[in-house]
Image (cartoon, rainbow, N blue to C red; front, side, top):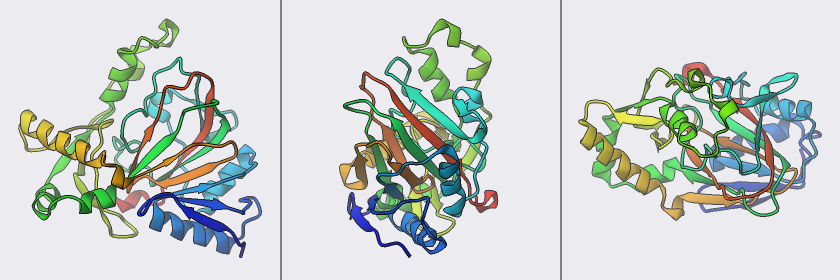
Length: 282
């Protein structure tokens, strides 16, 4: 097995791995990486030099099935020749969809198990990513609130993403295709879920995709969601990473939320993959 060093980014979430070349890592190394991901929920590997096929291989070897991700109806570009890899490219001239706390694609019947990002081009300043530990946030609720939300389900769809683009002054006329922004059919998930591998309970609503809580009036649903959204903003649940070229990040999408910090004024380009270990898990 490869010797490498670990630096924890926060008490419950996030670890930075140094001293490993993912292209040369052994199967035993990847077993350790997978266990680390389940334990720390966000794992970053520094100083990597990966071609797209190397990134794809990392996704396969970490032990989670790759998805050919439609990326919200095709509104992001796939890397040519790699239907599983998307290009996230922004120079500050486009709306930043991730600039709110969210998990990826909770409007899917089976949301991705994990997400991978790899840095290609970075602005000189800005463009950090924050992650929040939804298990720690759940444990931070009072026992009465935990019992209450265990009984609830919520509807998720993608209408907020379309609203963001259509209301943005950064949307270019040539980008406007109304059919691309039609809301997806709502799917229902529990407000509190158990992780399929660790059994940990987590908060499972987010400001990007959750529309309402089933069985509550709209004012009641709004009040409960607002309380949960405010709760997960507490810094004690967070870690933050300032990206460096050659960094690969993988995070547990079922146990975290993340926030893409905007405000940068030059190009930020990353490669992204969505992974799903077992569509039958949820």
